Image: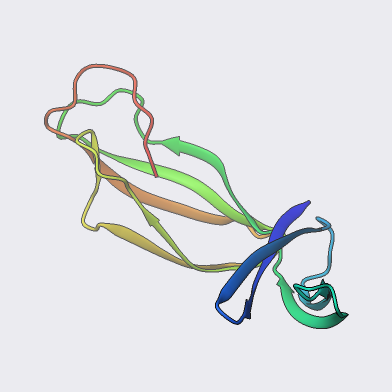
Length: 151
């Protein structure tokens, strides 16, 4: 289930009331714009009258898209400070297309991307594997140990 909420507010004289209503969209819900009807029933302060107001609130359901990293590997399993190694992987989108995908590394003294600070992958179409290869450099101050390559 995908969780969401609608937040709304009302002003009556100098009093402002803000509330939210939670709802869920099923995982297999077709992406699109839906209308959520919200009925607000009220009574005046003195209880002299009651009423209601119906709101139609547009809600957009987006595809539940997941990025997958498959077949992650490297050209070397043992490296020394200053070494360069090639990293390979396959990227795939599942559940819909992903646009403007950018691969970057968090700041690290153990690995840096060779010749760039990020890789513009572009668009990943749903269900298609995209091979990726890039070089990283082992930091000069990397201590002996077992490291994962963060992305």
